[in-house]
Image (cartoon, rainbow, N blue to C red; front, top):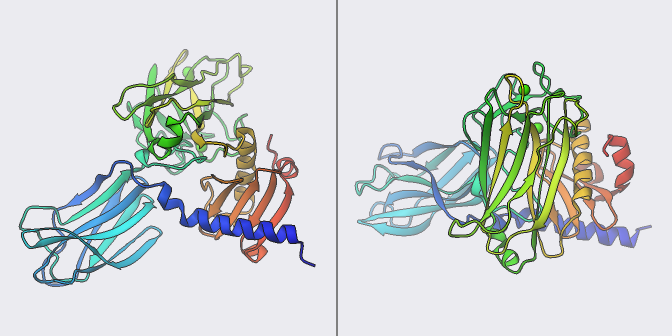
Length: 420
Ligand SMILES: [Ca+2]
Ligand SMILES: [Ca+2]
């Protein structure tokens, strides 16, 4: 016998997930389009034209411009774009023309992961542009200024996982501008913090620390323009959160701040701060403690500068430690209580570690949409989420025949997963 409530909920969630996936693009449009890559020459004239471009970090790509000779290809050109997780073919949209050369607009409008991409234009008319304009230009937003979405972490590489497990110091990594001293290191290397030290249950491989200097800092700017209307009506709020700590009885520490700026780069409102976490708060144990602060986003804010500053008190290593940093903006009444989302995130992380055959790749970004909070796993085409109204764990994927499966109350799974 069909449970009608279950059925209605399943249909609702199916629609929601479908909308959430398809609708992601409209929320992540660039607030200020820039050239991500520029190349003056695309192959040689006379046969299929192929070239590559590289994105050094995950970026929102709006479109790729391919200049072509309109006299030779009066009806435009067709092209393909292939790379990590993408394979697109289309006839380019005709843009502006100059001296017989026209821009073919290859539309992407999606977030592309870091990597090398290949553009192939099947027209002999694509070659060096005699007007001097670059033949191949990739437009979009650097990931650190991507618009973002309500309810999801706006920080790029807030978890230090954008690089492989760092068995030795890594001082150059995506997302952050650093002074060259902030360092990513793997848990368990040397005498630093261990995988089993008190801290987040879902901590990945790596954490941030301050290197071997007295002061070290890293920062990134995130755009808040996607929520401009809510911000200016005073109904947007933010939560700055992270796990912060240090080593043994030393008072080496890290402080994380978020400073808000308006469209003219003038500071607005108060700066949000979490940390420092000193040795007394850690019971002199090498560990990470969760810290967060929430408030209304200052009216007029269009961007936030998030900065982690490490300070050394003892020894040679600057042992302020940080991981799982997040800045989350919520609009109107759709706020999910952060304690619920952090509990859900912990269970999601446990699910990823325990059932990689169901939930891959691990570390998917959590998203809030309406009364749901969930992660989508592209490799296994499945969802793991919660209903925020009654805090039930829900699954949708191959194992459930792509129907919603209610897995019961979250608290049961917290216990199973060892989450607080
Ligand atoms: Ca981490
Ligand atoms: Ca130290």
